[in-house]
Image (cartoon, rainbow, N blue to C red; front, top):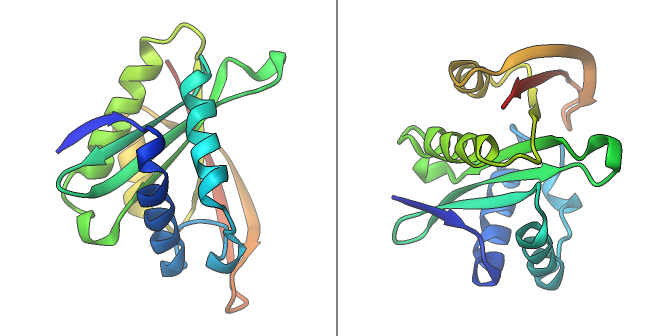
Amino acid sequence: MRISQAGARDALPLLALHRGVLEEGGYFISEVDEYQVSLEAQTAWIGDCRASENSVILCARGPMLKGFVSVQGGALARMRHVAKLEIMVGRQHRGQGVGRALLTAALDWAEANPAVEKMGLSVFATNDRAIALYEAHGFEIEGRREREYRMADGSYRADILMYRYV
């Protein structure tokens, strides 16, 4: 597995992976039908991250895209030092260390980047595997928002806010 920065050629595979993970319905707040990102918008997002000093998209690759991590730095002056982290790994690649490798690469990138001081993320309170991964990499719970999300079946999920200084 190789991890490298996303480029324009990754726009379509990133869209497909993102859509596939959302179709599972259990890990992210967006419903799959709400995800209406065009190829042009995806390509522009990748370009914007490449041009930004406080953002990056890293891809885990084998013969195909296995997963990606996005680190999005704040756009406003008072928030430029904080970056939000999001990881997506394709179903067939979970449990193989892809998420761990992506998280490690993102933290290495952030620690070498003087523009980023704090990494934050949001995760469903029911996603025990993700929470354990983040805690193993030094993230701490910053807060919990009860009944933050109402799922399609009417049940609610709490949101866990986590952070790590880099």
